Length: 401
Image 1 (cartoon, rainbow, N blue to C red):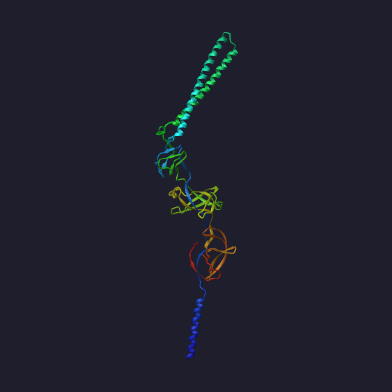
Image 2 (cartoon, rainbow, N blue to C red; image 1 turned 180 degrees about the vertical axis):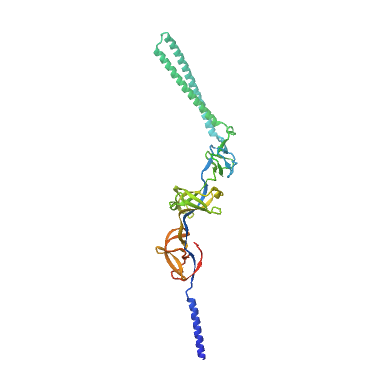
């Protein structure tokens, strides 16, 4: 009896151990997150940062070299076409050093000497004119008494005309010599004589708002130096520089969604122009990239984006393809099987691999052209532990990417 009881206990112990081993070695279900294939709209976009700018921007520069007086206008002030926005006083010439002054004095002396020489020549020619006129009158009197021929009269008339032309040339030469003297005297004029001259006003070419004050304090500026930037903030556009391989897919008139601009809603815009010429830009990683500027214009009324100003940062999503009703899944549910795409679905608690044909896709969702019906559960983020036939435990995550 004791022996039978001992055997029963042994068998019970063996059964307990076997049960524990079976439980320990029994395949466990792998927890997975699932979502369902859905039908709905899909947008394929090119996403890039952009910045706003005033469409018609005018840089007001100094028309002459001189000292610009302090500019009282501030960014945001309104100006009208023709309004004086700055004032410039022509700057006095620099003081002459000893050598330059000596050269200028020598130039003045030479100019005065040349003027004297030309004046003397003018007096000589004037005397010749008087002599030729007297000789002409004498010959005419003789001709009236038949003591001189007509040929002699004509010869004296030609002499008078020639002398008068020489007098005109001498007068012009005297005028030029006087101008040379004046120029030499101006070089030696004291700089103080130039100060306190008239002020040249700088006017705005258009109605608008001061966008930027390049010069604020009084300073000496060269001709053409920028002073102010003026434009109309109501005429804003967005500039986005895209990689050239993305820019070729963008067409004028394409719809654009503007996000991350500081407002609580997405703004609508459209592509106005893709510039025909690209440029090289070095990325943050030091890689040279070919970029192309794409110009966008707002489609929403001004009240929707009036808080934006010149040079503000925005996020632009340029739509290059869209459809209103397609079967789609998150791109995180896709797996690569050789040259094909596939997804994992769940049937009877096990993972099942389904090959699919993809259509368009963006970074978050992909269009399923064939192989999957709407409402079919798919596993998102399938790891290395997931394969066909593996037991899984579903945890619904919604349409997560």
